[in-house]
Length: 462
Image (tube, rainbow, N blue to C red):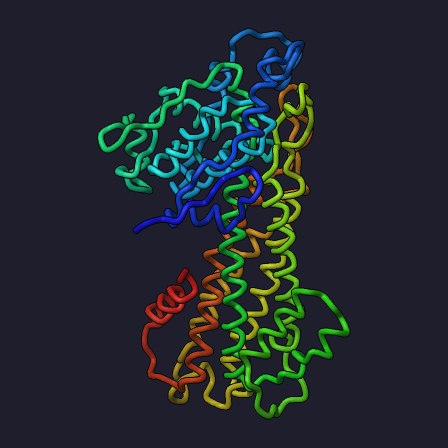
């Protein structure tokens, strides 16, 4: 299948682009590299103490060093836990490539096509899960740099994923049988500039934002089924209601739900919050997602380098700090729990004869359990979502002899946002199965695993 290219130019990369590249639906192509070349030329003329180029790093910032860059990579290529999935590592490569094109790093631009080749050919570095705190993905990118130098093996497409990939790395699998491994002689002075980035964190954040955007959009359609099944009033969706409190997400949800829900007469003066406040709560989640997407996409296309090579100077700075992304992702995960809780509340009404006019639990005969078990499954997934919504930005860390005295923990915020996808899918799938059953009529008791799997397939469809 021919893959459409995503042109990387350091300015226009979106969360959707990252997702398409990560999952092999698009290739990357290197766009104009003028800014990268200008920064490289300026970096070669720098004099004086430049952090990471002429000095050590962290608490060694005042120690002059010569040609120590490769040792920096070796010392920082450390991680723990399982290997990240190939799509996450591929997304990281695409993000770092785009950031280098934004200029400011001073890294030799000859590495750009090599990184693009790695992405398109299916080579990924063996990045471990744990090793960053939101002040730069040093372990992941140092590992990548050593792969480029030929000191660590790449994970290639023929290795598969999961346990096979882990075993391949542990055995020191060397690439080259099916295609030449990406190799680049990264100069010692380019070591710190290459790894001074939160590309792995941003990759996870972009993947999470894209998938959650799809699910939050799909949730409106699922809610419309429940509205119809419960005979819920459309009065809370009226344009006049939204104009009285003009939050953009709320208005968008109400407008779309009005188009999907053809209301009939309602026997209730007003419904429970799962219906009456859906536009407000789900709209707030969409607004939170919009803020997260803007924060993430800003950094996808930013020069977050320290030092930043701009003009003829190196500017020592804190652009690497991930506070904007971490805060936005904390808010997104909390908002996701709110709307998922309303989904579970609507699911409860679908078990209630007062809302459906049928037997309890959508059963086909008195005393049967019907779809009761869906509430257990949904509440299990909802409990996981609540756990993942715990804020990371209330903590900090002091490391490197006190030189680095704060951390954003966007790495953890992004990782948890990505993990939110599965339980939120499950909550939506449970509601969808129940609403469909309520509309189609009761059925004899049977295992509902297949129904849930079918609903999940619909929610996961591209």
